Length: 71
Image (cartoon, rainbow, N blue to C red; front, side):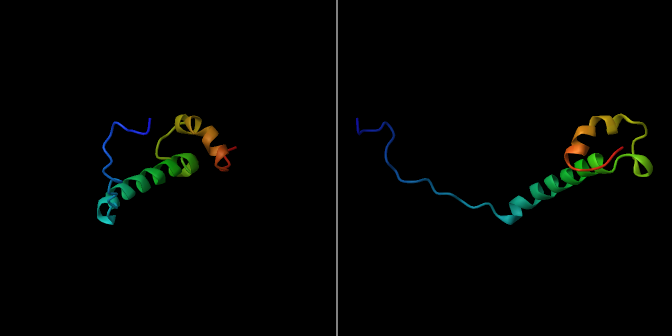
């Protein structure tokens, strides 16, 4: 039982990801994180972009989980 079905060719080569290829994804994820942080942390009151309480109710539990006061 010491035989394997796959031929032994050695370990596959791992190629590093360049910073140039990673930069657009980093900007996208960073922008998305900032938008989420805004909606969870500041979307109410004088800085509200969307009127009403809808956004506040959707992110209410996340707001408390992250330590933002809301009431």
